[in-house]
Image 1: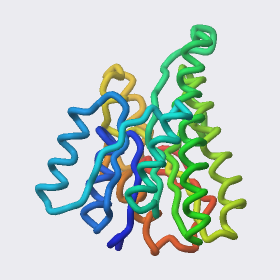
Image 2: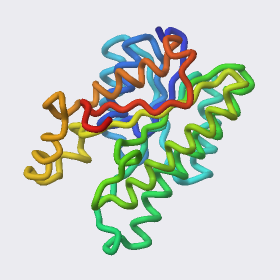
Image 3: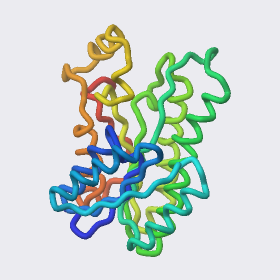
Length: 245
């Protein structure tokens, strides 16, 4: 489904980003795996791709840094351009409103919002010239419904939803679809540190009765990255086991 398509996955070294890179490559995509500090992990990802006969390269960039994003897209152009952008890089912040420092808030905004904005802007310039493209932004169910103790994180993921919808309207005439995926309780590095009692409380609200996996999310990203979703844009698709409706 993605043969001869080039996909840039930000934050590709672990979790949802890694699962997405592997799944999209399995369906024929050439992967550009973005990472910031986790070079060992991204090298392991590329080794796995190459062992399976798939194409993949790595590009280091802190997505919150405009100059580094610009340099990354110079490399993307050198590699032949981009058909799909998966805006996955992000950080989580678990803290109450009155306990959240301005520095903590700024770090979340810089990575989750500024980073997604910069990558989408640069990718859209390339896609507009080609007359086609797909952008998939990773949001969260807390961006739709909020969550106590995650004011900064929930706010950043709500921003992703608004940006996705606005960009979908702007870029649609250029043949570019823009959608968001909103994962719920997913088994990743970000959720493994949650207290067991808190996990149980969350799991009790999941109708399907299990914690989701990174592959569950990657499958929806795959759909939004292929021609199967050509008439889907400006949407927010929850991947939460019916935790919210």
